[in-house]
Amino acid sequence: MTAPLHRVEPSATPSLTPETVEPYMDGIAAFLGGTANVIMQLSLRPVGRGVLESTVDSGKVTLHPVKRLRTTLTYIAVAMMGSDEERAAYREAVNRSHRPIRSGPQSPVKYNAFDPKLQLWVAGTIYWGIDDLYTRMHGPLDPATAEALYQYSARLGTTLQMRPEMWPADRAEFHPWWEQNLAQHRIEPALREYFDGLIDLRMMPWPLRFTFAKVQRFIVAGLLPQHVRAEMRMTWTDQDQRRFDRLLRGISVVNSRLPKQARLFPLNVYLFDLRRRMRLGKPLV
Image (tube, rainbow, N blue to C red; front, side, top):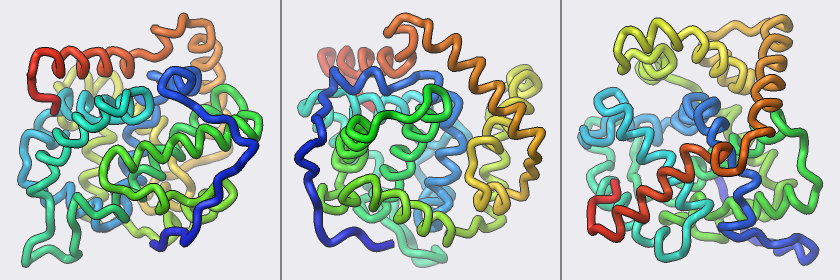
């Protein structure tokens, strides 16, 4: 992956703030898109290997799924809706967790959780997921607002070590960068097995697996780009696509009628919990 060598600031693009970005943040989108987005993030082999080989048991979704969900969604919430002070505090907490995550002598690829290039890929994938699900559920944003959301979403990387100038200059530059990089990724068998475990909710109690695993697999397949779907050996038909589109339309109808705080759940709750933990001096991760 290569980062752009320049950055163009669009003069006509409005600026967003932690308060004004809220209409574009959906809690239901985080639930719907989370697993598919993780698969795309980890399809970059150094990121995937960092997760597979991690010795930080407290952060493993396979061992602590609820805690891992809280940590991930809190990061998105604070990066997009938090103050500079809150972002700095969470950066410090995440850095402590990331410090041991680096490749060893036996690792097939080199990686380091502090590598800003890897963080660029993860941040770009999260932004892509936010934009993709918003468009699917609510229709496309007008160009100026879409560009403003894109520029603002650099916070998904700069909340950690990604340098601002690494973020592709605008949406016109971002989308081919993202698609070209994603198309080059190949999912190795060990990582595919890990992803299948996430999709099938193997880390959850049996009643939850029985109730939700099949629906989860359908949603994940529907949200993955075709290249990643093929790498996961998933099938997808035109009929599946029509069923999926109907499902998203139905969810969107209900979601759009919810009051703001209900629509933001659980992102707002996790951000509130972060602020509570900061006041009480409790661990943030």
